[in-house]
Image (cartoon, rainbow, N blue to C red; front, side, top):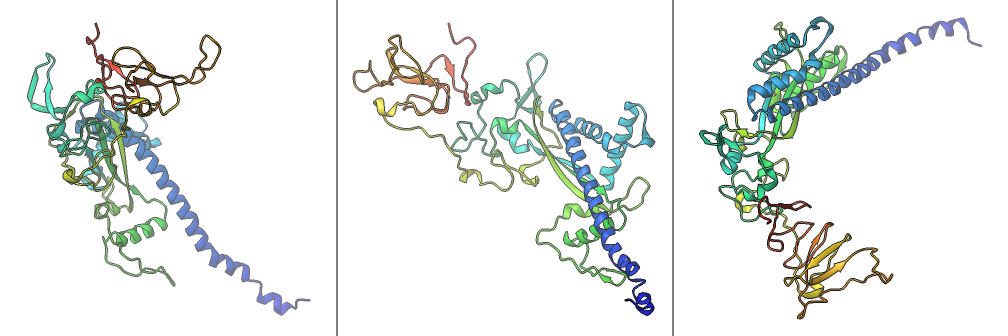
Length: 403
């Protein structure tokens, strides 16, 4: 049985335990709330940058149209009950806020591609309404991309990339040069009390914006963060950028990118970056530093060697029909086909060839054929004079080439 003295000694332990646990619970709760707001901001910024890329893709990648698309994309993120009004008024407010954010340093966007090297490889004079060249305007052609194989860069690397010519300066194919790539950097306000300022303080030291120093929260030692090996210097102006009222607001830098295919010819201008000025450059090889032009190596397609029936045998499923040079029937392999006699038809090679010569085949699936054939469903003009090889798994007749 507990005595009155013992009951008096344990009477305040619950309050003391609550006081000890409450700061930790509050920090965890505030942290979860703040990161949820950051993820919401990231989704909104992805949408805004995609709107900017769409606006640029239909307007020759002009910066003023990209700015307008970015402002339109940021309108839902910036909207609140106090600025409700007409769409035109909301758009005007968004453009004003975007201009202020860029001047204050917490909004920054740049074009990653096409670059000046892309225009050096693939650029052509723009055409006016009459089809005459405009010599002072250089664009990357965007029309008839299904015949892109007919266009060649001014200088190309020794080896193509999957049969596509690659420009020597940009290391891009024509399809690569027709991709508009944008990057957006945005400082998201850290509005949750305590945790926002603490996170910004840590990251400013990690990114080399401030010298390392210890932080104490009352009697609690918060430690001393260390600077990372590769600090993000671009993030420093965003951490403590001011808002419209001039008040310094702790911010968390977010960087996102968007890629979209151009719907109009990209126009060379003063905003067009150089390939070496962009943090991410290269062609279809992806992000990071790529090999120099003289050391560029692409992965070519496999063209099996051999002649006769063994070298011209279809290697994939799907119906295939071939014809030799004399127009006679060559190899044929039809899965599940039944001849008139009711017996399954066997694959035969070179039945009408006299010296092991087999027919050339046009396949609809992925197949491997001999020297005069094609690979992965591509039809070569050497095998079919009325066709032009354009890559992919389809072949198109050239207008006017067939009688």
